[in-house]
Length: 160
Ligand SMILES: C[C@H](O)[C@H](O)[C@H]1CNC2=NC(N)=NC(=O)C2=N1
Image (cartoon, rainbow, N blue to C red; front, top):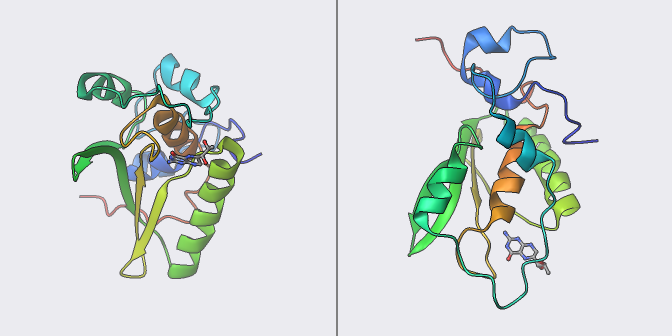
């Protein structure tokens, strides 16, 4: 219902041309998403409390990064994370956005760190806390966040 599989997504907000496309457009900022990114959105996060899960390598993270347009790798205190930021139209629309992300996280049992700073700047960090690094769960969650229909909450990028 939230990652309802509709093809438009908030990433298309990255460029005016995308913003005007009909809602059935595939997501991501202007180029077709690879089939594997579809694979990630059709996957389910798994409970990550088993002791034998290790954080993935930077190489593996970079390979998976291609499947989550708009996200970047961030290393903080030796912990590798997925990071994405955007501007929302208002403080309350930021909270609406958080609620939609929270619903996906709850459905997946895997949760992002959500920041709303300077009233309209959203930053999202995702990593697997129980292993202290990145697992496939993080990329699944990022892909499902990307497929949310939220461009009505986001501030359009000024066209250069
Ligand atoms: C048992 C269940 O997997 C844990 O409680 C979940 C909850 N959500 C989580 N979210 C994230 N990002 N990392 C975790 O390690 C985590 N653990």
